[in-house]
Image (cartoon, rainbow, N blue to C red; front, side, top):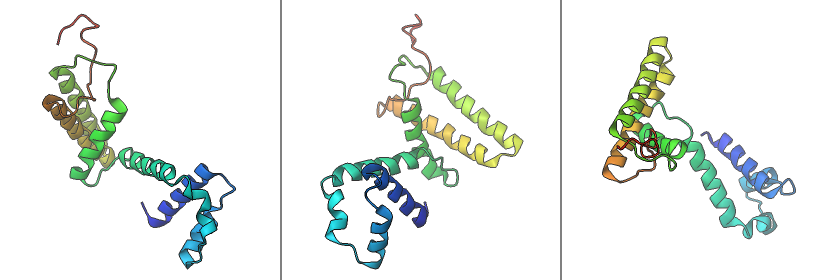
Length: 161
């Protein structure tokens, strides 16, 4: 994220949190020239932790929900987290190896299809999403994280895993 857009995002987040009565743009300009006063900080002092938590969550969400397609090794863990948060299946139980196999095959097919169509960005994204699904399968096998479990509830369907 560029510094200017990060600044604009921060100003927008603070304005949304504190309302239009707090002129974040003016305060930021005062910060730039070193003329900020104590009163500029007053609306923030009682809510610093709350605002910081909201801003951190906003940044975290943006990072996790923005596909990384340039750096494979950086993209895989981010995509794995994204998959667990988006597709985590607390309501689905009884996942088996074939559920993982079909998910990985589906994602790899999407990568191949995009590459055939010449959509390199989508192909790169789907290679990373395929690897992330493998990382999530590995996490499930080791018990490190079982929050992403593709497939159906085998017990509810009368099919034991």
